[in-house]
Length: 450
Ligand code: P5A
Image (cartoon, rainbow, N blue to C red; front, side):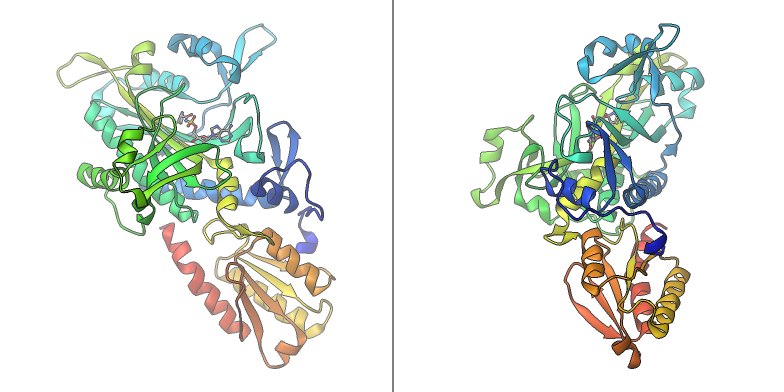
């Protein structure tokens, strides 16, 4: 993309309404625009990151054997009356009447709807296990929407639902989700720690939240510091293997890590003092096992091996897709702006032409632009007629992890500069070497998708 042809309305001033850094930087970088309290338009730069996050989620769900679909945002109130949640959900649910005075609602989650789909089409245990998921907008009429996309009213969620014959199978599905989430968050450059939590309005008493540690997080968390040394890395997991998935769950959940909802002071005190940590965290996902809560209420049964009908065992599993942008920025920024992890960056590299209109720098930038694209990467070429300082400030603000700077003096010696946004370090090299270096840098990111 050439910056002169792009739409990236960067703000010069800090917006007053933003209380936390991610919200401020998303507004300043022209990624989002507020349309009403907790409701945002996704401008092109923000939309690109949102799509990158969705792509990682889809790839990792496919790897785990989960099946993508799409359910609507509007739901019939009758389904929710069947489960009893129409009355229970309270004022967070946005209730709507259509022209025939029928009660609808803008879905805050989809347990009822997916259970309805299941009971309409699945009859036998032979069709299990089954996990269906979608990435869809949700609405929760939060009393205090704040911190931008972090606590929105309309927000994008990946929500998946498993259907199994036995409790043991459903717990395997739970573990599979935990593994796939650990992998997904790491690909986004995040450490998200699974912590025992509370079932809340979704239900069940076996649930983990995934928390990214950050001072601005809304949850208070208590954990054993050893847990922050755990990395999922690029290990290969057979998602059908009960033992392998169980082993990952045990590895990542055996140390003390809880939100304030389930915090147990006595257990916490049992950790050696130097490893006890109290901090704040951003909840970027949650997985639930709730057994037959919805299937019993809604008559979702299957014929088992012995010919009798039993309610199907279920759980649900959510990732806060739009919230993740805020969480990633909270975890990765400096006083100049955002620092995108390579896995989600909106553009892989910025190309800065220090002398726009100069025949040699223009043609070197054009050549770099073509060669970077030929690697399957997406460059942002700052081809504006602007001072170097302004171009650098924009690149730093929007946070592309790599920048190639092209100036007439360097070019005379066949040199450009490759700069890391994270370390600020610049290295001089030939344009060909810069392209080769980018190829090396992004190869693991591209391979992670395979
Ligand atoms: C699991 C999937 C559920 O709704 N039903 C379907 C279950 N879980 S949850 O924990 O309530 O939500 C899943 C994730 O969505 C994000 N989230 C939000 N993001 C932005 N703004 C909000 N108001 C908001 N509410 C929830 C969180 O990341 C949460 O973990």
